[in-house]
Image (tube, rainbow, N blue to C red):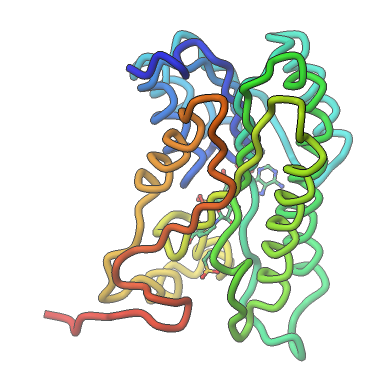
Length: 260
Ligand code: NDP
Ligand code: 8X3
């Protein structure tokens, strides 16, 4: 068990699946206390129960839609009432919607990506900073992506949104200098979660093709990185971490094995 994270309050957005759910379990195993948010409450309840069984002294959850300021305000009020304190904030809620070239893309997809990835990160951070600043040594970790650093066809809006998250991380790092709070981004490459299922609007066959012949990152790989970043001593800030599977040298450069 990690002594630094034990009993710290770790808040994870988008904790109902993928990286967020795996991170809840990994922080639980380190003895942290959890505050979990997402829109799907049934899934949050399951994740919270698993976290408790893995060693989290407390695993609390509440509905959260980071795309709605009113929802973030209600969630922040709940956190204030329950704990009044956040040590680790993991801004993970987000994802991609569609893979259409700009010429054919839809406003609704663009808006969803900017609302969750960019504005959601800003809203939740603004709401939580008052609960973090009294406790130097805490950390804000944003889930970026390799898409923040490399463009690809059909990814214009998602890449722009994640590049936005990267610049939010960098600006916040400057703004919080001297507070003792740390700010980091963890930027994964391809990882098999619900990400592609959401991107392709439930088309499971199309989602599966993304990972065909590849050994992608797992949610647990990314969760382990998040715990490691949060668990560094208070004077150490891992500003930016890029993590890709061995089969992915660049967004476009992926080694795929032929089917057996
Ligand atoms: P998943 O689709 O499995 O998880 C996304 C999570 O975000 C879900 O828990 C979902 O919960 C939550 N979420 C989405 N929109 C909102 C919203 N408006 N309000 C609150 N919660 C929301 O995907 P991943 O775990 O892969 O993705 C997590 C993060 O990692 C995302 O930011 C994604 O962009 C990023 N990422 C993913 C990569 C990948 O290849 N998988 C690679 C690099 C980055 P619910 O629907 O219940 O609200
Ligand atoms: C997810 C990774 O390459 O699909 O952020 O954009 S990618």
